[in-house]
Image 1 (cartoon, one colour):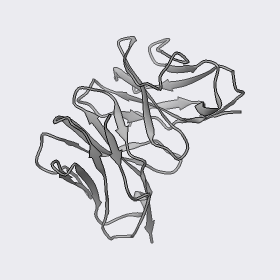
Image 2: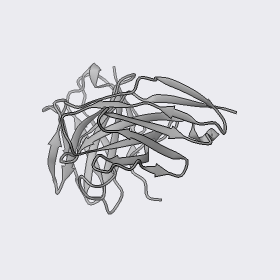
Image 3: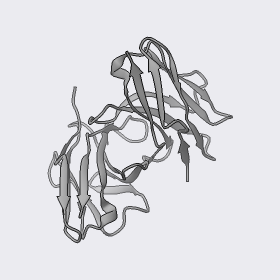
Length: 114
Length: 114
């Protein structure tokens, strides 16, 4: 089975600074999708960004960008110009191209310091 | 913006009792999912549902569990004869179509089995 590892249980960042959250995964498949979901306290998970494995270009969504290293099986999330509203639990997730099943990491709790 | 909703937000039950967790997916979505997250552990896939039948399920989803779409809007997860280890947060998700689309998550139901 695929595994997703987030090695940073907690991270903190000063407001307006940049932070990078790490994620690695293990798979034997060549076609898959990677996601970062954000879960604010007591609220549902919302999609931050997604990356198709067949695309070499790193996905970006406004202040959020990823560094996708397929050979290294690494998928880090960079948050630029951090805002107080970015404080949340961030989950990295993997999904095969031919399955609906998500595999999640254990999450990284991000604190934004004013 | 449309959201996935779940009821109840919290449920306490006695071991051996049956519980039904309810979800209202986003109205034009066709695929539905249940996940669970035991406290301190990863979010785990349970089951996906399409066209009134299960399309995928994990090893966790044994005979104790069942899903149903009783009408055009609700999607339910039934847990028969609950066990202590069923205590978890249960998330419902939906997606517009299958593997190419993002899954949108509900806020979760926290189930406590005593």
